[in-house]
Length: 282
Image (cartoon, rainbow, N blue to C red; front, side, top):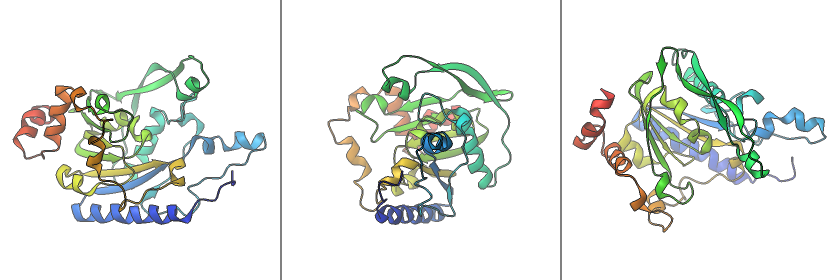
């Protein structure tokens, strides 16, 4: 609304983080793009304007970069009762990214009906479910990913990692995602495209993890509102510190998830990886 000036250090951190990400992408030879997901109020900008409230995009304030995608989304791409994009919106975003990276046009989607209790509904103290459309697969191919998560061991979402493995995915390639909940709630859509999807809740690439995972494609992302406070990748705490806190309860991890994480972070050539995922992904 123009009532707060965005500190210029956020623009500097954003551009420095992009330089950091691109240097790693060049070194390790993977495709890379960053996505800024438009804030839902910006999508409803004309509605706000009709009641006398003028909203401005934070992204428009010096956050542009040749390798940053700010997707052109519409009201239909967001859940009505939540701040998140829906499956159709997620597919629109990843389609744009892959087009930008030179991938061929994607096949048509299959949707099924479902219901969702959105965050905005919960905030209002209501329990009305929204009727939604959930992606179940592509034409002639249903999504059947297996998911492994740190979620049960974490208090909150800081330090979260999720792994999705889908042998029926369109591409037999590994996708690594660094981002916030806009990525997290899109993982099922992405797993229909890539047979291995690894998500870490972080807005920039963690260098050492790339050496181990050897991905084909890496995407980083942040929701537009987080541009108000962009961390400096060179000054943030080490990733492993998330698991030295009382907030992390390792004994709550399932054996299946524990084995999956050990396998994935042991490298594709390791015996444990081949024993855990070899038969699934061949």
